[in-house]
Length: 264
Image (cartoon, rainbow, N blue to C red; front, side, top):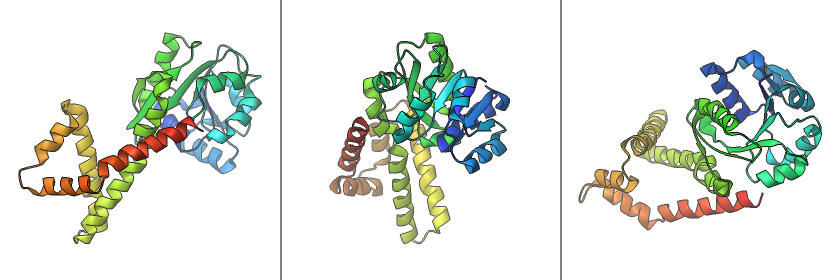
């Protein structure tokens, strides 16, 4: 088996779906485990991968293992599989707060580790994933991990000291954006727009604005200024956002997010 997933929830499903849709690895070469029989059956029915209730079986059979369980279960799962993990296998984690040092300590032996931080837009192959390896991982192995994660969106290799910033700026930020879209739609509904239409207008505006930042190479402030005509509607809206502390609220929320990540 080329790939194994311990935990087959939403993020595992997003990664498996991206891999299979791009043809990088066939379903027959992927095995997943989960304590939920419903979850295992669901993943098998959708993607045709092999499934098992036994985490050790995944650890024994896969060349690369994704740990896709919640952070609070990492200690238990690592204790369960560490004796069957060899120095030829590669373990990829997606949990905030679990540093490479913490992982190495819990495995208790040299293990090839890659710490990652994806986000939920991976479910529509528009994710942003940060990657940081330990010293046991070769450049060729890291390149292969990046190629896997690029099936679900953009991927950047970073130094581990930036991982908590990544949690705040991309890992958790879809929630901030969803709140903004919902609020924008609520305001449009208050102005008489049907709700389904309001969500479409708000979401497309956010999507298009993000695409402009990525594709024009212009500073976000410059793009903002392009929309703000003198004495116009947009600058009035921006004035109110500044008065209400919109920018500061985002910064403070992200600082709180990063601090929580550090303390997990």
